[in-house]
Each structure stands twice: as C-alpha cells, then as structure tokens.
Length: 589
Image 1 (cartoon, rainbow, N blue to C red):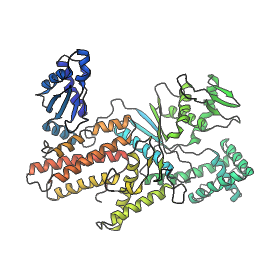
Image 2: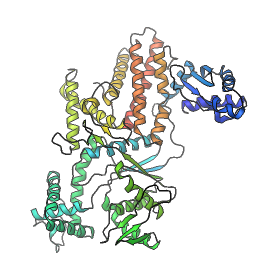
Image 3: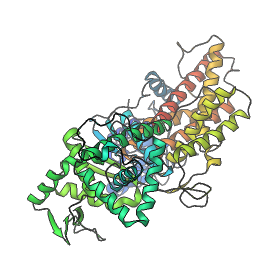
Image 4: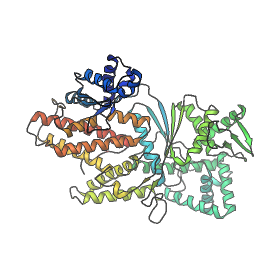
C-alpha cells in the first residue's frame, strides 16, 4: 500500500505534466500551515523561473486541473503561487479502511530489496553488573533492530561482550589468591575441569572491583594480573576453563537483566571470539603493505586528504605485540564478514568514541576487510544525565546499577497505580512493571539519540505529556471503549470506517495516514525518536477526538460502528509502534 503523500504527489504531478510542466514540480509535502490546509505544493514557485510565468498563474492552472479530482475536497491556488490541498473525507476513509484490512502491517510496505544488517549494541563487560551507562545502547539498539525487522530486513543483534582484556587477568589473579588450591592453577593438571563454577555471580561481581583496586596500589599484583592475561590469551588450559566459567555465570545474569529491559540478542559473542582471526588478519595487512612499524607499534594510516582535523593512524598491535580494542574490533569485522556477509554493520555506541570508530572503519575499508558495498555506520548516542545536568549517579554519587534503577521506577509506578485503588496488589505490581518499562524506554527513545538528555523520573512516569505512560494510557482507554462496545453484544464485522464528520475526527484520520512514512523514516535514519514523535501526535489526536465525540452514547448504530472501526485501527497502529520501541501495553491502568 503506497504512502498517502506518494499518492497525493502522483496526482499533483499528473496535473503539472498535463498542463505542460515538468514532473519534478509536483512534489507535495505536509502543510506547514495546518490552519490553512492539510498538504501543500510549492512547485509553481520553482517552475515560474523556468517557464517565465507568474507562479500564481501556474498554481491557478494546477488547481483548476485538480478541481474535479475525487482525492481532494479542495485544491486552492494562493498568491504568490502556493497550492493548498485538503483531502476528500470519502477518499480518506477509504484509504484508512484499506489500512485496517491489513491487520499486521497497516499498509506499511516491506522493503523491496531486503538487506542483512548487523547491530553491535550492549557491549557489557563480563563479571561486572549492568549499570545505567549500558542503558542507552541496549534500548536504542533493540528498537533499531525491531524497526528494521518490521520493514522487512534481516537484523542480527550482537551483544559484543568485553571478555578478553586485563579484567580477566585481574579476576584470575584474585581468585588464585583466595583459592590457590583450585585445579585451574595447577599447570600439571591433565584431567577434566569441574563443570560447576568456583564462584557465584555475587562473588564474581565483588572479585573484580577488589582486584582492580589492588592493582592500582600494588605493582607486583598488577604485573601478576598482566601475566595471567597473557597466559590466558596464549592458551593456558586452566585459565581458558576459568574464562568459560566466568562467561557462563556472567551471561546468565546479563540475560536476566536484559530480559527485564525486554532486550534480546541473536549473538552472544565476545572479544574472545575474534582472537582466532587476528593472526591471519595482521599478516595480510603486512603482506599487502598497509601495516608498518611506527615507534615500535604496528599501525595502518587512515588519514585522508579531505580531513580537516588530524586522524591518527589505527594501531593494530602494541610494541610488545599485544592486541588492542582496535585489533579485536577489526577481527570481529572479519568474523562477521566470513559468517554473515552483512550489507551493513551499525555500531550503537557512546558518541565520544566517534574518532575511534572513524579509525576502525577506515582501516577495515582500506585493508579490504569489508567489501566495497558493505556499509559501516557509527550511531553515537549522548549522555543520560541527572537533573543536575551531570551523568546520572546514585544519591551517594556512585554509578547506579541498572536493576536498581528499574526497581526504583517500578516502585514509583506501583505507588501511582495503587493510589487509584482499582486493582489488587499482584495486578498492580505487574501493571507497574509494564508501565515503568514504557517510562524508561520512551523517556530515552523520544530524544534524538545523539543528544544528551535529562533522566527525570517524575516526568517520565507522568501520565500526562510526552511520556510512555501517556501513550499506554491512550491505548488502555481505547481497549476499555472496545471492551464496553463488545459487552453490548456488538461487533464491527460488517462495519467500516466512515468519512469524517468533525475536524477532530479528520485530524485523527490524517494522523493515521502517516504511519508508513514514520516507520520508513525511522528505519532510514536509524531514529526511533521518529516513531515516538508520530505516536505522541497520534495519541493527542485520539484523545482530542475522544473528548469531543460521544462514542458509546452515539444513537446512530452505523456511525457508532464507524467510530469503533477507527478506534480499532488507532489501537493497532499504536501497538505496532510501541512494539518496535520495545514495550507493550497492559489491559488496564
């Protein structure tokens, strides 16, 4: 089903060409003066110069041509040469009825040429709990993945675990100090290693910060940790077995925490998975003449003549031969290209890492790790700040654990719902979780990803304004009306959406027509905030219509059924949108 703007543009373009003007002048846009019209075309203004004719005379011709077109209620020429358009209510109702009949996609067409797109998001370190700094990557990445899938593309999300650096050596060193008798530290051990990890997630989360603190004050301890890291990375069996335990325990806990966010990954690969690809990759870079030694390190030049600022070389190996994040990320690209051959890889990462990813991407392209057609895309996000404008912290000034933040918001929502005394405690708790998740996700996603934003719990959990709970409240309101209508023994099997009779009804209908365009724009720009802006406008239009219209009290059965059909479509579109944002609506609030 074509987008409404494309259909309108096609009719206006036809009018331009039939009057002897070039088709390029027929483009139609949403009106920037909704008080005057619904859509506008400024083509006559641009055509005036080419055809040496007053723009209003051209606009007059087009308006006359469109005067008997069934699509338009009005097509008016306005000096100095604008074309103002209003859709015919009958045509509009027909378009929406067609949307409604497509109950899965509501007329939104899938991509003609589906692509395979990999998403690198999440990026937690093993042995560390998720904190608020992990929130944005997870929420934004999950939404982009869902939007892409809705548009018909194959989207593969990879958590990209931090599981290979010094932190592993620190954990091993601290564990060795505490439990030196473990078989993992016996270099002569030949048997099978235990299936059960020698620590719990709670112990693991305590071990790492303890080890990290010790390494800062004790040079001998740090040296031991670095040696343990080296031995792990060079295949010491006992340490490899410990790494497996660390991963199993950590990933189980990470999955539980991500599940609470309604975030999932198709791949749970880490930096360790890229290690086998490093030797051949490095050798090829040397053989092909791209990598050279500079101050002891192996580097690849990535600067370009058009650069306006200095772009340092991409370091591949340190002077001691050790790999870096650059090395791992490049090897991960090799792995992804070999296994999946993606058309595009999108990295959802803190925007402060832009220079780093510029180096990595250029290096990957210059050394032909990716095909020329493969797009590498950096999607940098801003900082989540507290009300003081500084990065969000606990009241004590530390970094807040993600599960504590969610628990705090769940409790805030529970108190608000419990105060209404409309449901028992269990239902109130479950509903609070659903609504709290909408508050967190919508609060984040409604902002342009690249911008910093203030995480304001009071505002995000409000049932009024541009918030997740307001969107859910709108959906629940529709659900309530539909349930009452069905309770009267009525249905809409034979009914259809009728032409609008009031301004608020038509405004709602016009908002609904924008669904396909909003989803398409959100995908092309990798911008979930586009979906948020769309559903906020749609929810406002629905609530305006609701307050002005006696839906269940309407005595005309046909008119009432038409209203219900319109509400069913609105509910479906809203639910499709919140699904790609990564949350759902309860039955009641």
